[in-house]
Image (cartoon, rainbow, N blue to C red):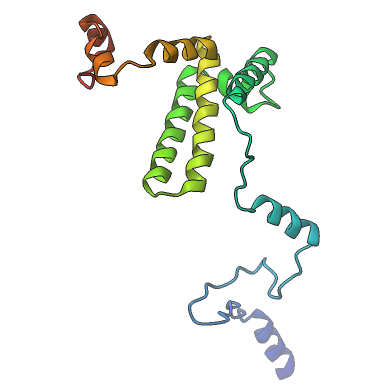
Length: 180
């Protein structure tokens, strides 16, 4: 009878909580659901990661005509309205404030990378800014040709002279003191 009582008492005694072993000083404990031994990463995954993480290599033949093609692509996505498969359509469907917010976010990221003198990231963020600018133009119903015409109008004019020539009414409409 004494043996049966000892077995029942042992069965009822709470088990000590399993402790997670820390392999080396300075490493974080590994959660229980992660295997302790290292597993081999499939070659396909390694190859995909290597291709994705390659250094930025730019084609030598870049030109500004890509902006017109980008605008046309975004416009076609707007017309299709397929937010399930198009990032452009999804952003436009969310409204002008969201499109403008995304442009602002990308502009801030560009400024950060430019100040850090990170050339590759500055190029990448510049592309993001141009994409989101084109998205904003499509959303506003403005064609790149209209922007190019404004740039041609300003060509050869000093920025200081151009700002000085702005009418006071324009500054009042803008409701800002940031413009000279």
